[in-house]
Image (cartoon, rainbow, N blue to C red; front, side, top):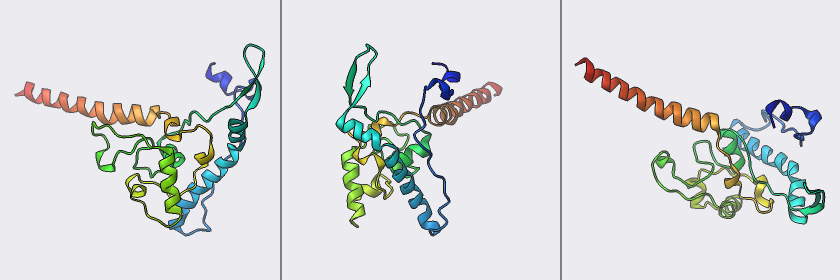
Length: 195
């Protein structure tokens, strides 16, 4: 489907579920505004995905392509967002990886790191909510939130995050790395040629 069709509400290619409120939350201290803003986002998302949660658990009757009506169990499969929103969705700070547990001092190193386990992450967040201080909370750079995806059936939010082509691939890989490396090589070669 072309982009012109996707944006036309009259062809029903998409459905607006709701609006996420934008507030400066000036009723809170500056220190708490960010934390409360994160939780406000998750509370609104809990409302927006409530029907998806119910349909995923109980099933919903849907028309299939073959003309029959079947009982389907829809799941939350992808979340498309830029890097800061990805961090907001999974509940980590903006200097952390929204998908894996790589330590902050090893970002960019060619290492294998384990993908976040949603159940373990929820367990760590619950421990933090009960005033315990689990080691993983700081190691994974988590925010103290109650995430909207906690009760979504068959949902691994960390696997749902899709790459941000503009910031992570184009700017991150191409501009920040390849162009810098190529520029260094060109200058090194030109210095050797000039001599």
